Length: 283
Image: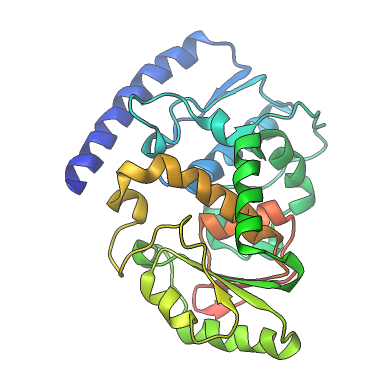
């Protein structure tokens, strides 16, 4: 079933890419069409990178960013463009002064080196959250009594991520969490992972909590929850976007590398309070 879903997705993507290339030739050059499909935050990273690429080359913003075929894994049945259900465009001007560096490979770099000040206007303009996502955020914060100033995020993207980058051991998270606990005995640990074993391992810490009804996780596997549970992608993609924003606002964050961790820092606007594991070492 999973293999069939992946093959179907590839066929649909190839047909759409062929059609869109023809459409892009007909459209004005002020329309930017983004074709990339994969995981949710991979789509976000490539969308942002292509907007910045256009901005660097043209010294201006595209009049239209067409992401209608993106987020294919997350569309309901029958499929429809859904980017506007996650993000609203805020028509704030961005003046070109110099090239800005952001490429998809930056998900596996030291996030402290990202040009956060230069990226902030792009996040505001193209990735401001819709009222629906804001409502989900408010509901989660109220339900779990999230206090940002006394919350430390333990975020671990496991499972198939190990095929892309080195992952930290669980014990490293416990050591770093206990260091934060020693400084702030009132801290609560928000445990977030797609790997069930990681969640279980973090429960030895005091004051831990999990967004039980809003996340999906599974035993270690060489796939992702999106590919393993495609029928719930539309619903949980919205919840997870809300959770990523919530994590970005917490005082302390212990995380790995990859697109999700990247977007935690992009919504945060800095790496203050962030401990990042990258290719075998903590930064």
